[in-house]
Image (cartoon, helix red, strand yellow):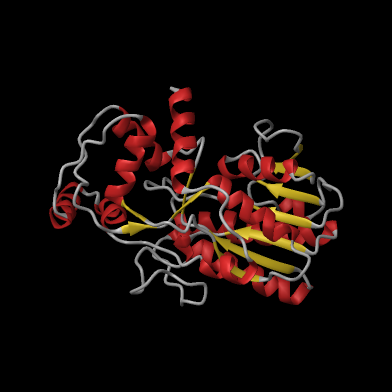
Length: 317
């Protein structure tokens, strides 16, 4: 198949490009900066962040059957934008619609949009989030992802484009940055962590598993329109995750059993409530529908995914 991928030189995009190329597909990476794509991915440079030029046919990246939209303005803790929600909407909602218009121009029949668990919310509704739960996004990033989902589904229905929404939870793997990399660094350096009493479970997905699921959906001969949750299917507690990272890094995790209530109090006093809430609150997604309805299974276990992530972390130091 001929498949175009926006953000193909990003963290998830590189994993997806590798999976698609190994499967024999012809992949075009729609990128805003040259370099970084996996293997034989053909790069096509895009001039703007909101993909207006792409929607207008400049450049025309050629005919294709599937477009995967990965590129986004990602979640940041300290946003310098004067109006963060407007900035997220411009990149993530308007940008996604421009990619959808470009997909129709290219003759694509299917658009796969990578959303986020943040489109649902930051707190579980009493159970792991399901695809049909009512979203309650709590920050500008999550709001923009939810609005992008709704806009794309409406566009697809009006224009005859099959729209597939993929919602991952926390994504990890070689090249991961931000908080996950910081957690690995703390374990690697033997820094004591006050997370030994945190029993909240968090869903995660290894980048290779997410890429495999997207490749699986891209190649389906029958319609897979709608929303799909993707995860490793093995939700660890924060304490279990830190211990597993210690095993993967070959360093014993130094965990202090500080009660979560104390951690939340420290978060309020230090102005880091959001960071502490992410560590102490459960946030799981139910990804059984993809496995049970379509028969997809994650090719890598959490242990294998963490081992690959830790190996890349050690080699990069």
